[in-house]
Length: 214
Image 1 (tube, rainbow, N blue to C red):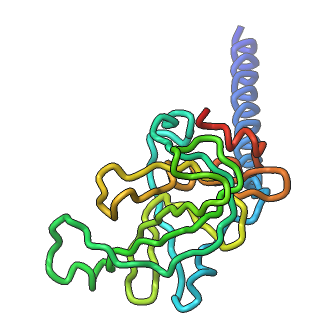
Image 2: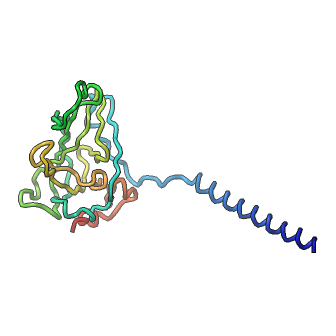
Image 3: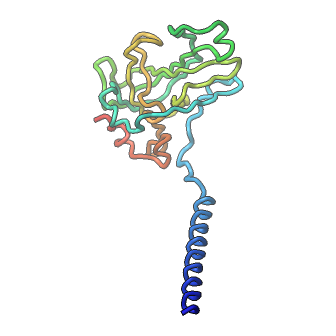
């Protein structure tokens, strides 16, 4: 009987040890597994600001990364070419700020991104194919570094894009200011026959990306 107990305990210990080895092996395999590579070259807005030391991108926390969830707030869904990027314009935040706030945290800037419309899936009557539509990014300029607000998408001149656009209802930055809904998730960069963004790093069908608000 004692021998049977010893044998049984040996089997249990072996089984636990084996499970531990398998689990460790699986963990190590996952740990060294390389992250999924990007299927495209992300946009780099710093190319539009050679006079600066650099552009830094803030992060944001979104309640959703799916444009379909906010499609009723999107007024324009367009495909187009970025024709120009503005150098940044000062704007005054109506919120009360402490003295010397700008010198410590940077001054507010808005950056116009001008896009020639090539195709429209959702629009108000004021935009048609061939028009230039402007979306605005916001950030802060501190000394010679531009800090884009969290989640803002990046653009480059001459790139082809899909953007889902909303209008600021509060006119804080300016009257009828348009912006990219969901920021980096509401803008796609087109390369080849696919549309890419921070969520779809391996690309998505162009028509599907454009039709997300339908």
